[in-house]
Image (cartoon, rainbow, N blue to C red; front, side, top):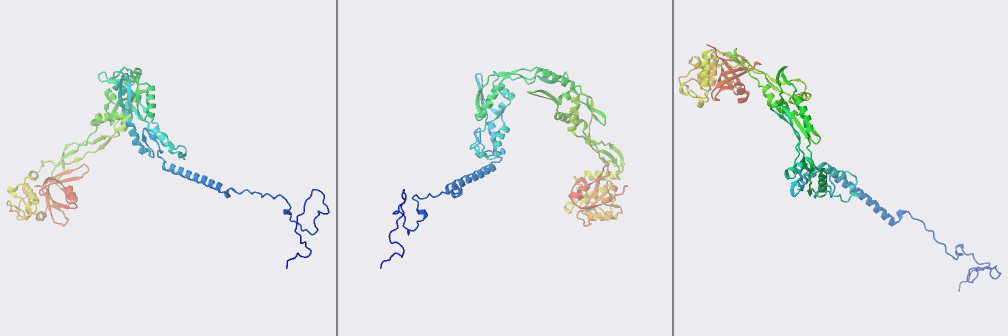
Length: 557
């Protein structure tokens, strides 16, 4: 069964109310039971949606651009900082000087390159019909290292230099030219076209004992404009170029008037009275020739300047004064008897001395000469005291000791083997040699100490330990190392090399020296280590370190 509309409802289709332009009639009025239509459905024109602006970070394209810009800035800044750090105190990339790439070099590394650039500077110069090729160094053309290095290094000290210049330009070859050297080269290279100027001179005349002048002579050479053109061309052409020089007059740097003024000044200084004294006594007064020899004259573009050169004064002092005043000490020599007592003076001693403070002395002399006032200059010395040597006379008053020493000195190297033999093959000949000297002196043989010729001697005569025992039995005074002042010529020394208390060697005192301070130096005549004057100190400290010795004082007859 079909559905029916609910009670009270119309089964007819709903129609919208019509809108008329005129007043409503009864037939057009809405039915009383027609439901109300929603308000938004009553309009015949739909409403437009309102657009809202989104934030930039919600816009994809804007965000991407911002990230790119910020990223580029960060990378660019980092790259700039890195490049600043890498090239700090280094020459920037792309820097070229006269065809040489200096990129990334330190100033020290660039130095050899500048040397090479200097060596490669070459010019072709034409004067008249002649052309000469020359090296820049010969012409006085030099690389201005300071200007070039300043130009190279200043750029690397600027922050973010990489963004201001993608490639540095070639560095101009800044050079300087010495006009005097350049013109001197011209004069030597073009002798027919160029004349070298001759300065007015001042020279010392030995015969007249004064300074005289010579006139100046003008010359010809390159003008300042020529030199400027050469320098500018070299800067942009890598250090080479060809130039034509039209000679212009070149005056001498020292004029005649300057030379005359200098001559007057110097001749006045020749009158200076500079006297050197020793202990306030005049020793030497500088002569005119001396003063002239220490005079230095410097001439340049600003004129001529005289001075008294301390180096020249040092040379004068060394060659002339030092030989006069320096001296080595001369030892005093005294004669002594066998007991070491002074019997007379053979030679008086002289204190040595050495001139000191040459630099101070030179400056003082220069001041004296400059002021031209009489001056007395005291010489100062280091002194060396002389040594008093109480040298024993080789002709002692005691004939027996003289015979002993004379015999030993005669047979130190020339053994008397025919009479006494040689016991070196049996352990040493030292005791045999010492015994010979005592016998020649007059000490008589006995049953213990004797020799009847080669191979027929007692052990006390030939063997050091046995001889020491025999010497001890004689009753002669026995001395130790603290009693050297009691030694005399002809006494016997006994030596123990290894401190075992047993004699290893014997020798005879052959010389005694005594210094002015009382220091004794004792010498011995010896076989085995054959020697006429073996130094006691050397024997027990160098030859046999830490050895011991004792001595027997042989009575005088």
